[in-house]
Length: 182
Picture 1: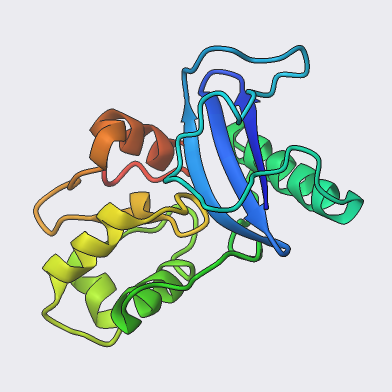
Picture 2 (picture 1 turned 90 degrees about the vertical axis):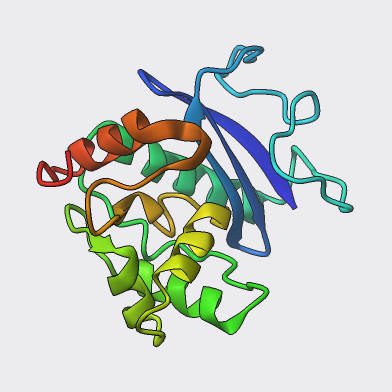
């Protein structure tokens, strides 16, 4: 397992955890302290993902480092406003319920600049009428941008975006060129 923090101008520091060539955890960039000279945060000091029983290695294999570098470059391009696809990045989609797994797979198909309602996401995941369950999925999503819950809106408006807040959700949607949900 490799954990790395990355800096994005104007957004802050994000965190990425990868294992076996897949992203398993992602924290969106947010202003955070203690970056080293390369612009990376020491993950051993301030891990923000749930505790892992596995030791997190800062220096993985050359293949792992290349994958992490590629993903971080994609994320930086995304936050710079470049239209990059994160749907092709391998991610860990193991969820506690089959419905959550179907939500994740369906949401990865929602393109940049598009939105769906919680009810539409539930229907795409094979459970029409399960809008609240789709909302629960979004609240527990540990792969923002790769499983883009910011593209899920309430039927009556923007909806929520957890601890990041509605301002962050609006900023992501604006970055993707979606003015309708703002």
